[in-house]
Length: 237
Image (cartoon, rainbow, N blue to C red; front, side):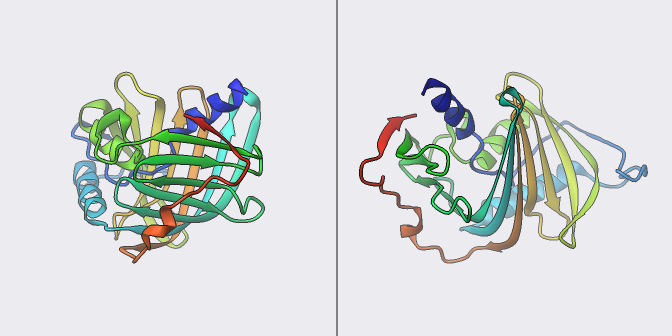
């Protein structure tokens, strides 16, 4: 049980994604094809992504997630619909074969429910949608909040995802952090993030691809409500 709860808690910080990443100290890397990304200003790209993200009222997308847990020699995959509304409300609604799995932040609590692997168990953590820094449930906002002083950044190259041109940006923490690195693929036209990768300090690698991005959709508040199933054990995270 303790091992299960530990794994869940390690995943808490990575359930919500950051688009807005503003980093003042940057370098330029070589593109994947070998040519330098000359003329590309990573500060400008990240600042623009910050502005676009900050202006969003909501975001809906289809996601595909892969989690490689090196310590356990295990890899899991999942897909479904991604909902985000502000920095305190978030939902990953999984589809088959994990159709009942949910990750929900309702503005007051973060709920983790994985009946596909942990039947009759719910993890609940209290959150504060207004907090900044390490306590943020919104990973996108957390990284942006800490990035100005906590990360080095470099453009690794250009990459096409589902027909969209992106810039692949590597963020490496300069001090204490739960992540070894964060990598984001920023759309070169819309400045929305289409893919991200997080390497945690225990070598767990989480990769999420976002497709069919629908910014500023009207998402009912009820989407972010969660009620533990009857008979489920609720553990405080």
